Length: 240
Image (tube, rainbow, N blue to C red):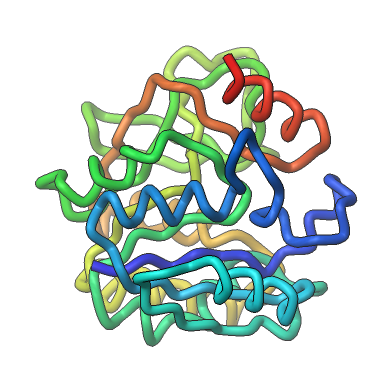
């Protein structure tokens, strides 16, 4: 089992001029919190996709990460692409092993990754019951199986009772990635380009029922840090 950490984005809404995962939350950083979580789960190989201020971030990660095999993949087109391209650049690694996929702006309890690794389900998306403050991609479920992904643009706020927010943490088997996810990403990029989200590809996979993706529902606090307010709430939440 390995992890892929997507950290190429510019984080324009936050306006800090450093990569978001370098920001402090409580007595740690966003990146360090994920490393702690990965180590608790027994994961020692980490592929990091960098882009914005890549040299600075790679030095930061190299200097403070002990006991892990770190591999860097650079997205040189980070300013004009989105996470689908960052992940696609790491496709050879994604196809090589079972993978925990996570993004660089998330702060969550460190035992979460171990829960995914220990789960008998092979292909899992972490989700949280929809609340009004949330933003972004949502899913609906049939039991614990994801039946559809709903983009932010198509979300109907008049009917949110059955919605769950994607936390942007996944456990994906080598088979799922090599047989379904990577070929579908390739086809999507060829048709729509590089400036989009890999969640749309996952949505097409489950919609067409070519593979199953299951939900790991969490009820505890987690934070997706896109703005100054998000960062403030995360810091205050950790202090409570």
